[in-house]
Length: 431
Image (cartoon, rainbow, N blue to C red; front, top):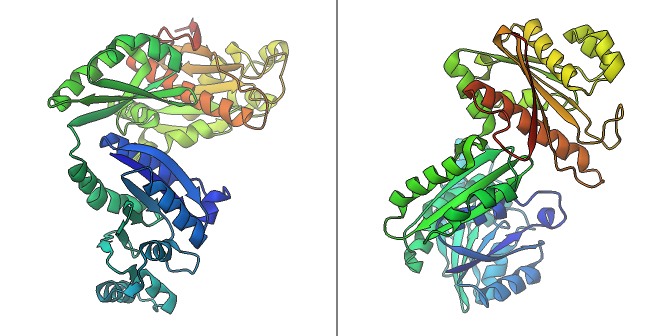
């Protein structure tokens, strides 16, 4: 089955809103064996929407639209589908009653314009929206079927999972498919592809690489009658081949993994950040119950503050500057002691756009100080973007990932580089 996506809205076309709906739909459909052949964004123009729907149905078996089903007069998807079908919009009594009841329960006054959400193309099938007000629509056109979903992400996802995906799977007679995503940190995509070559060659197994700064996830797809059973074995082999770089699968995130490891040991971490400006602390506090494992953090951006707040030796800073492995180690030990944590995690480096203290952009040192005054410092090899305003945020994000991954490896007693080309390690054991 071939499906095309059509997202509607001036805010998407002009870049005011990131098109997260299309990304989610693409992943969700792929997970169910539905092939997405094209994704198009159009603005809030009636004729443009009609033209895009007609063109998509000339190529695909079905079209899924998002957006344009709300109450305002620039919500034109329902109007466009009615015109494309050559039918009128009609007021659905049950939808109107539901709208009035929802508004009454909220203690608000129903605005007449809101009743537009009860208007549907004649003959369309209403797709119930248990998460919100605007219903979805299934409209049969001469070229095929259109599923129109609201633009509000939670509402769109609810209708998609509850109604559209099961229907698409039934109508397409899709084969049994099992999928899982495995997450890694600190390994380049080319390294992963080389290591996983034998898995890619297996029958009815497909791998897709999903890169992010300093992280790469690999989506494993296994097809066939025994897909679910075989998937476990394929994942196990992937984990063996990738080794310590694997930190989780599915919905697991790096910060959650670190949080669980610390919580399981009744231990805490404190952070000292320079170039990341508090981003590591922000990640560590995303986890529910983070107060049990995150003692606190210091953003010691100025060089002299590293000495005053963290006790980094003055002569070390004078001789080498703030960007140096020994400085990272001292920062980690200083914040650990100052905040009474089990571990100190520190970063210092050059995010750009200009070099600092003779160090090129992308030079980063990450230190962990643990019990017994053991200290480990890693300098990851970061693939630095070439110029432009994106250099700083990318380097900062990569630093956050490498820092959390270093702490994860330390907690698990793993090799701090994992054998990866992307990292070099400098270890100083003082305890």
